[in-house]
Length: 419
Image (cartoon, rainbow, N blue to C red):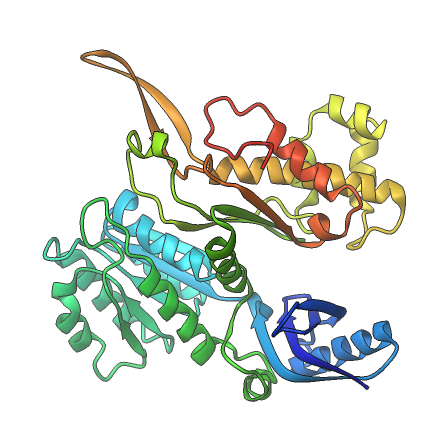
């Protein structure tokens, strides 16, 4: 029997993957991996976990044992949240960044006072957590209180996190007193103008996720087995990214999946950009592109690729490419399918990076032409990390990343192609 230090389980929405690691105290090595379809539909995710462990043992040629088990999960839809703040470019944006950084799947975001139609949409969304923000500390109070009262009236049996004006905290406690909602109050995500305070809210979201959300059948048993916390899988990627920044410095991570492409950046802005940056950006930022998946959304990615690229790279017409794309398997085996997936991945990565990164904007003031920076500055990034099937399994995965970074940058604040 193979003895290892650590087994890590990722209980995904469609697939459960286990990875075995050894020699954690000296020179850590990945011993092997196994996978099995996630068994939410069967009512017990432990079935899928056991299947993935059997697959790992089969790949290793012997049974396996481990000293510690850790887990992340995006099963049963992951962490679904709604966010409600005061102004889109201020408190709403800060709350949104905190939720995304925690690994949330944002289903609904509002600014200002909630309307009746908003309340209907909140109920229809069936969120796992509701986040209320609004007002800098000792600033505007009424909007967050008004929204809290309306959310309380919905009688939803789900956790509510308040991360707004600290003057409202006692009022918020009274509103949710004797309600069916578990209430969590944290520091303001936007305490002052142009100041983001995301980390406390991000941590609480992940703690609430583990306490309340890991409710897929059998998850309680897994919680008993694991050492540490069960967190949302995108949140686990962000945690790893933060740790890697401490060791390597400024870095960006791209996770190209079957349904989305996520970009996680952990970087400070360059000295040149800091002086012309209009609005603050979080040091740790995550964006999710729901139209850039390699399987679920592959047709939308294909539409972004010019005809000349299809002809020169794959020697197919647009019509032929659409037919091939429809028939692509989730895991490509044939060389032509791998080539097709590689082109899709390249396009998804180029697009996701440009949506994540900021830009330089020219404007004219009293003294003439000026340049300002808006959004996340990636020019100081020195390391690029790729994850997800396309960027870890395809033979030309390095070329995919290099090509995406070599594209003409124009006014975009993207990493240098030589990182």
